[in-house]
Amino acid sequence: MSRREEYQQRAEALLTPIVEEQGFELVDVEYVKEAGCWYLRGYIDKPGGITVNDCEAVSRIFSDKLDEQDFIEDSYIMEISSPGLDRPLKKEKDFARSLGKLVEIRTYRPIEKQKEFCGVLTAYDGNSVTIDEDGQNRVFDRKEIALIRLAIQF
Image (tube, rainbow, N blue to C red; front, side, top):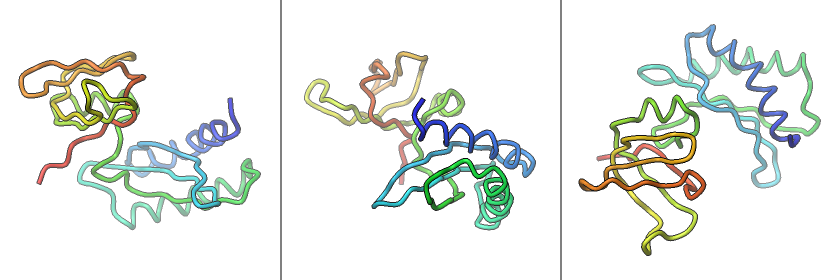
């Protein structure tokens, strides 16, 4: 396990009870380097959406817990935010919640000369994702998928 994965797991273990006590859902935790700075991000959600005040409440408690545990060696910026409408589907619960909904898929390599697909999510498992694209089922190997997220319709 990499140091980054360890930090993400430990942060998720600290953040989960805080988020659940507030009545929210922990969508994801990431520890990433952007523009030379490390970021520890927690994404939270609830029915009807997350507010700035929700993020602030979780952030204050989480910050105190991180200070107590002090397990991240690097200097970093901690953020708590909403995952947004265009959040990627990563976990089992994301796929389950999105069954029957329109999704966008981007692949690492072209498939039949294209890398972007859009269709209704009809099935998924640990190895594959199936969408209905204009009445035709299209099955993708999960390893081929660079990004899958809900399609935003205007």
